[in-house]
Length: 188
Image 1: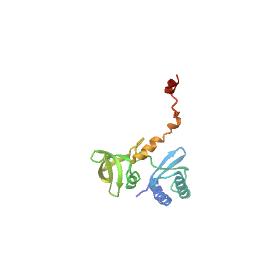
Image 2 (image 1 turned 90 degrees about the vertical axis):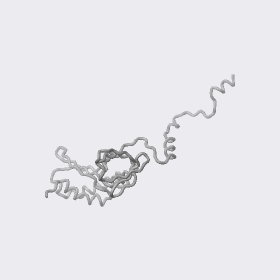
Image 3 (image 1 turned 135 degrees about the horizontal axis):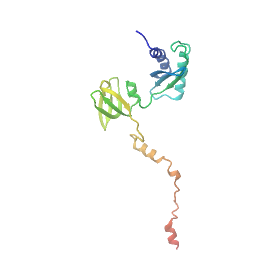
């Protein structure tokens, strides 16, 4: 059985990124002139900040540089995280997207849009227009998180605070001393 370069890279890098505390989500190796670009996509519960990306980059370089897995051609390493349009394919993807709105295309041809609740090894609970709906992963053909602008949270008080903290009031000249046109009429 032949192994591809990406298979060898995955085998080499998966334990390395795991020791840094992230999951290896994807790898790609693309030609770019006289070199190649190796993209290492990582994710973790709670997200991945820039310090963690730098840590992953150092760890991957430390393992790749002495290895022969990429041959003699130079490479450029890019460490990144999945974008919002990344399909949810594993239980950890669903767990990390908890409380997000998702559109699910089912194998039976149907489509469901709902908010992600609890997930486990077998499936996920969605809130579909206020009603719970359980889906097994076997039912899901494709699932993608939906982008929500100005999403209201479950806490209306927090939303009210956000609405008040727009900075608009700072730009308005308040006239609190009641010296308006009515007072001018009284003087006349």
